[in-house]
Length: 110
Image 1 (tube, one colour):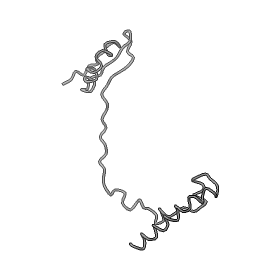
Image 2 (cartoon, one colour):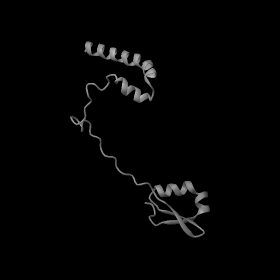
Image 3 (cartoon, one colour):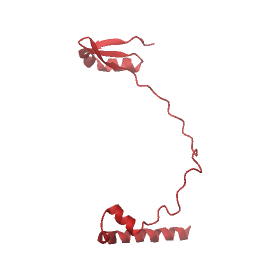
């Protein structure tokens, strides 16, 4: 069982024996680091908080995705995303059209 009384070491000793001091702190001992006899820092073990147990399906019925979630965006919204004028929008329109045709074929085959 580790010694629970705080241990005070000077800064030079702490630098020299840091690995050993970290092991002691991880075991539960508090290490006080002093500079010229004046405490300036404390080395303590990390508090381990238990993670909450995840429960699959806990939000069932509370979250949904709209049917039109992956539908092509309207030209004005697309332009806003790209921050460009109608000329730039025309270069993106074929992409939106191809996505729309893929989406309709997927629906038809379902």
